[in-house]
Image (cartoon, rainbow, N blue to C red):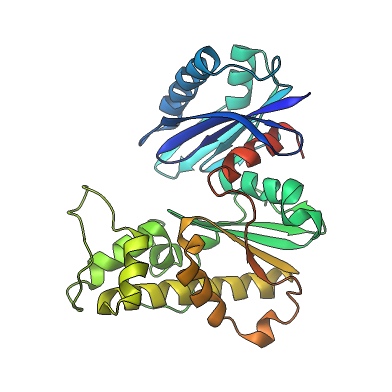
Length: 313
């Protein structure tokens, strides 16, 4: 049985696992990554992969190929990881480095583009060739598939739709330098930022940790919103409005028959239902398969995406 090794590197963790051609996760192990630059990331990957091989090992012989899903801008054709963000830019030939070190063919891609590949191979791609995958987690990014092909852009930067404005005007500054981007309002980090900005204006029982000592939890916001907490109601409604407007903008631009939502923020049933209520029927009339939550396990969609990258699907 041919298997594939996947590495899903996020902002706080690295998940390594082995997957078969049907998308079944055979083995996996999770490692803490923490804040890093690209050179440090290479060391984290190699140390973790060495440990994985020594302690977990292969299911049935060496995997056919290795795939890595990464935050930031990635050239999958040349195997170059260009940058994490503008403040952490150090191009590195990561695919070549890992292939030479481990003797396994290696391919790399951006994490959300990798998750979109997983949707193409094992998710909605089984019945749709025109879909949008919107990931709403710590940040917000989009994967777009048109006529079965994924949109990448001239600098592999397509899909950074979290840095568009969506009509919710709070005066909150985004990490990109603009104000009121949907990521700064509706992502996990954005909800935290908005809670700190607005808490002086509303009564609340929401736990707000001191700066640099943790983040407001979106789950707490949605729970307290349903209990009538004034601040949490504003935060949840603004986030839902922002996500709904982002969905409708993407629908107008790309004409998908399916919109897939992934990420911890929209996985909350209350939030998902709130977003659906804010979608305008006229705008959504051609989205014939509807707006759906990903059927792929949220814990493993990044790992599956990395293995889809390994398979070059």
